[in-house]
Length: 48
Image 1: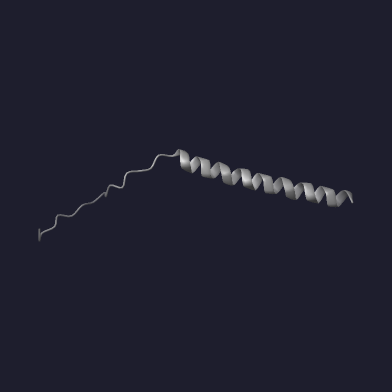
Image 2: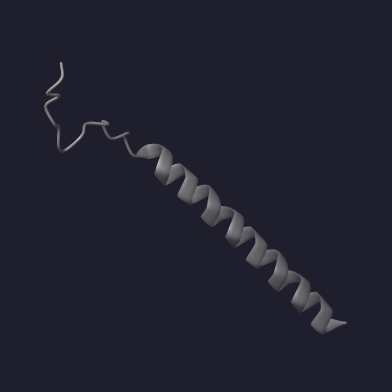
């Protein structure tokens, strides 16, 4: 019974750490400002 309790606590801890890591990654991605969508190279249109 002791091993079952230890296994359950380990699994619960691992799940909690996974959820916390996922929420941390989402928070970090939301904190970064959006980059402007400006092309690095532009080509002149000859027909216009």
